[in-house]
Length: 85
Image (cartoon, rainbow, N blue to C red; front, side, top):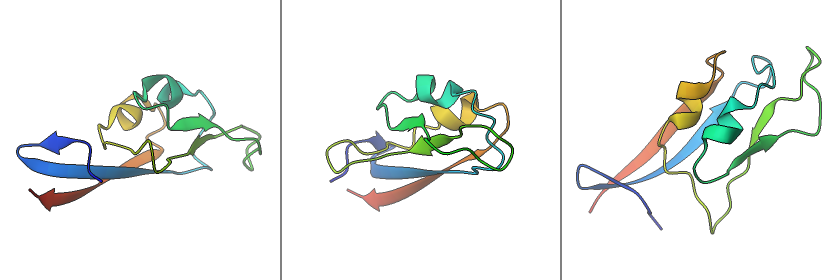
């Protein structure tokens, strides 16, 4: 189910976090309006607790890009699945 619209197109999104680039600042956690990003429970190889993407069927990513914009390490890529209405 799509829950976001850009220029008349329904959009569903997802993000990919480069775990080894993430330094655990968690700015993305604060920036996500849907609260889909949390702190991981395992360290990366550099010794940081990276951010982790946790979508659910009830709460999906809208591909707003706020997480990627807030990331100082550019460790987040945002993908959109656009469908014509």
